[in-house]
Structure formats: structure tokens, C-alpha cells
Image 1 (cartoon, chains in turn purple, orange):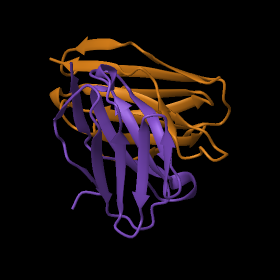
Image 2 (tube, one colour):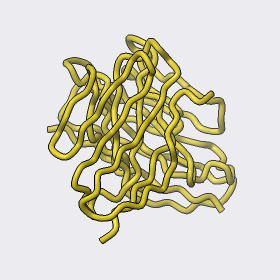
Image 3 (cartoon, each protein chain N blue to C red):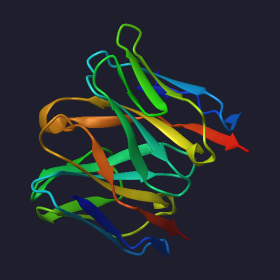
Length: 112
Length: 115
């Protein structure tokens, strides 16, 4: 089983739609969770950090379910500019050995 | 504010040639530094990380090496490139304190093609 699993998509949605991505992780000791966004041929950029049960930032809501070991990302009122690959990331280890484990990403295309 | 630089942006190299990619960070001290590779259509693979000058941890046995000669400088090298070394190489830094201590921030990357 992969340490971080995501549905690769692609998700094709019209502008204004609400879309949700799920991600599952295998390490029950993980404490930090993130969603990154990666545009085509660009570096990943931090979208949201999820440190408790969840948080909201404008149109984006991230939720964490520790019991079921999954994280979700909800995007409301999708914009064309939301088209990208969304990477689910989970921490592993402690101290100086702390690392991030990356999912393969979910591709989103928002259509006019 | 912190910024991270990588160069070159694009590189085409023949098989068997050497490689040197450089990454520098500004606006922070004693960051943890990371080298990742993203092959076409694949996820990010951690290659090396460094917690300080001269301290390198290797994640995957391979044809590459890393060095950290200064606090904010991280270098990825190879003596002889293989075709399988092609990919998108990303340098990242992580702050060492505060609530955001697990977050990593990336440079613009180097796209390497080995022919």
C-alpha cells in the first residue's frame, strides 16, 4: 500500500462548480498534513496546511479525519485558474529526520 | 521574506557527462534543505536532505551526490549522467521553528534532459 494515495483524476468541472478531492495515508503517527498545488511544469506551491481537524481559506476547505486516516480538499466556486494538479502531503518521522511523503496528485481541469 | 533560487532552469546533457545544480536560499538561517526529483508523470522523490553545513542524508541509492558547503547553499552533482537521471529537479527549504515548521517551500526547479 502506498503511504499517501490520491485519485489521479482528471476531474473535469465547469466554472462555478464545487469539487472535492480525497487522500488517504497509512502512517497513523503522522501529525502534519498539507495540500500543495502544482501547475504544469512548475514547482509545487503550498496551498493549505492542515494541523487540526480542518481549516478554511476563502474558497478552499481542508478537512482531516485521523480515525479514518484521510484528508480532503474542497474547492467551491471553481475558477479557470484553479486548473492544476493538487498534491496531498503527509509528514513522517521526527526531529531532524522529519520528511514529507507526497501523493502522486489529483489533476483538476476547470472548463469555461 | 525568504526566497530560493535554482539554476539553470533547463539543461540538456549527454549521457556520461557531469552535472552540477545549485540552490541558494535567502532570508533565513540554518534551514533544512532538500533535493527532490520528479520524473515525467510521477510523484516527487526525495533524493537528499541536509540539516546543516556538511551534513547530507541520502534517501535513495543512485548516481547522484549532494553537498552543502555553506549554510544557504545546496549542490546536487553527478560524475556521469545516465538516461534515467532525466527529470525535474527541485530544491526546497524548511523553516526550523514555529507552527509552520513542517512546511517546505520550493525553488523554480531545473528541468534536466539526458540524451
